[in-house]
Length: 463
Ligand SMILES: [Zn+2]
Image (tube, rainbow, N blue to C red; front, side, top):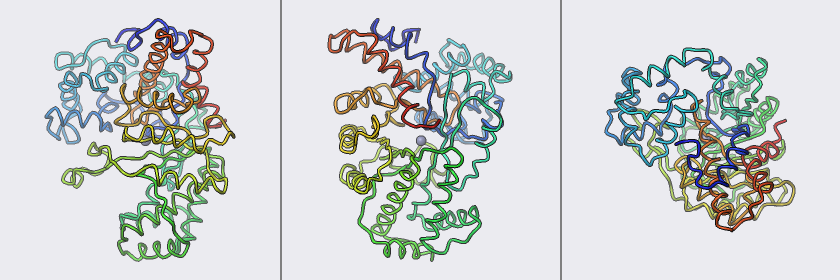
């Protein structure tokens, strides 16, 4: 992992070092807690910043035979770090191995392999640095040359931390993103009802009907807009595009509000209505909408009951995608209400499905209006990113791609942009050396700089 890590040709090296590496980071989707930026949080130790919320590492530790006590349990931070250090040598060929060492190198200047042998010295060195002001949340963001961050926020969120960050004059743009998944989750009757009650409370009203529910959501959407939000995000198994009538949706809402469980058809109709309405809202305010599709979540019910969601028991699903996606996008497009859209798949079988679907709705209004998003979650690794880049190149315009994002909960994950940029430059370098694309540095460097930063900056119109 030296200077030319992943860069196998001189063209790739030139593209990366002279062009990609100097571009700022436009991280338009992540899960960083905004309060930690508002408070400019300091971390006591490397476990807090590395292992507290990272289900990628937790999965690897479990696979390595580590007891849950050292993963999500009550072991001390040092014990948890020690168990991670014990796991790292066994992560060879998993992206965690590269991420771990790139993070140690770029942020802490540590060039050693993490293992039981080096665990103590690396722990001491990282923690000593974390005690200094240079390693506060904001300074880590600065160290990584970040230009813009979009967090992920629920419609009930007050966005107070985003306002605090803005008022503090922090030079990096930290914007909210609208993620209304809970407003669609009618399959969980009591959780949905609690959520509607929470929405009522935030809006200072009592939601008694479906139309009031939609009015409150629309006012929250406006509130997000006033707080500089220009981006939504949805986590879905797949797209929902059932036919429904207003009366049906109203009745379904009343049924679930009365505490009755809905059947599968009712759930699908309700989700279809909500997804469409959210799309219309996004279009009306000129936002971009993102859809993350294809996760089969909470597969291990025993550990779900014990530990809850988002802790490493999700995997790739195989839902029908093309037909409902086509119907959903077409319905919005028919009335010319299709917002700028980014589609991310978790199942690599859907790469070409998405890469071709976006072509159906490019309408010449803006370059790359419809985007096939970067390799996500299980596909956010070398092979997954290469496949995404190749599918997009073969079936669309790679040059119009808005590029990489961290999708991370950790402030050290900005190295994922570096990882992506090296892989991108390497693919282009290979093509040049194979004589498949011209060795025209002006053309190639523009493409690389655009994908790394310029395209995203122009596309999202956050300014
Ligand atoms: Zn995400």
